[in-house]
Image (cartoon, rainbow, N blue to C red; front, side, top):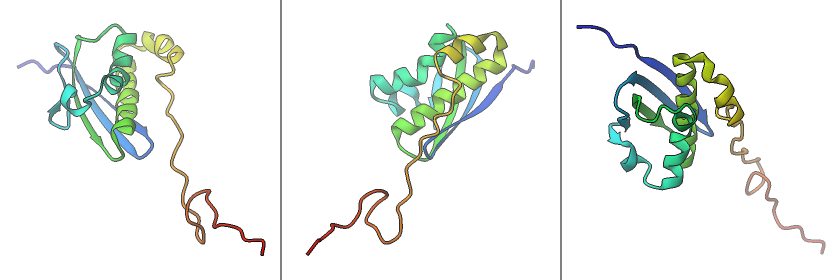
Length: 131
């Protein structure tokens, strides 16, 4: 039984982490054991996830098995996007230019700011009373 080539990559966004296993196939995408359309129900989230594949013109070329955890739907979609872009780089290094111009290889550093002690939130302050 011949061993098929499999590529793995990790992506992160906010508090979400996504691990992608990519193998040549027909374009089947599973996220946490569920179908891609079922896990990311809205079209904008689906477009975020598919953007690296569309840029590389490889939408139906690979089967993806994705494990996403932490955060919410938007953060997980961003983490999956970065992981797919990194996996595509392992497949073909010539895609770096195309993926980089789309901004798909950059990890989004924005995180939730921590709550400060003695205050109600990260930036919010208690109401000031002059008198």
